[in-house]
Length: 153
Image (cartoon, rainbow, N blue to C red; front, side, top):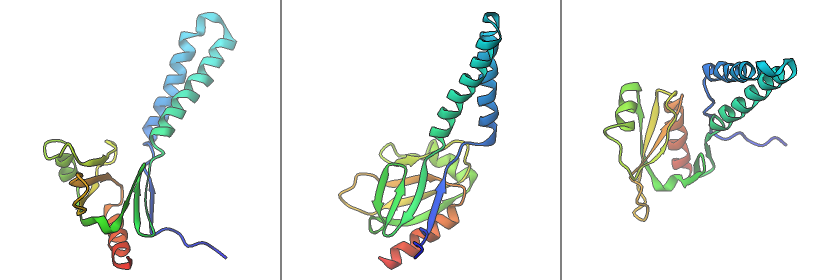
């Protein structure tokens, strides 16, 4: 028996250029340890690259999922019944909602290297959060998954 896949799942991975930067951090560590010999140089290259890669990977391991009747965005789990309409935002609109239109009480799962986003109103009167701002590479698909989950619930 095969389990059904969730209607939407996305991992907000770090961009490819960050992995190049991880390697350059390793090269920097190797150059710092160059006066101590070849073995410390290799240790600096491997160790520096590994530490930088772990940091980049942990920052890029955040997930957005719609599972059953819940939206799981990072550590937040919100029932879709508490969510209102979803607004797909292009690059300019997403930048505006990240900066001067932003509400300090909003839940923002934002990654600056992802230009598009989805803004979802929170309709629960007990929740002080006015909306969710979710950086996503596929905002139309996420909005459709939320709408489908809302109609099923």
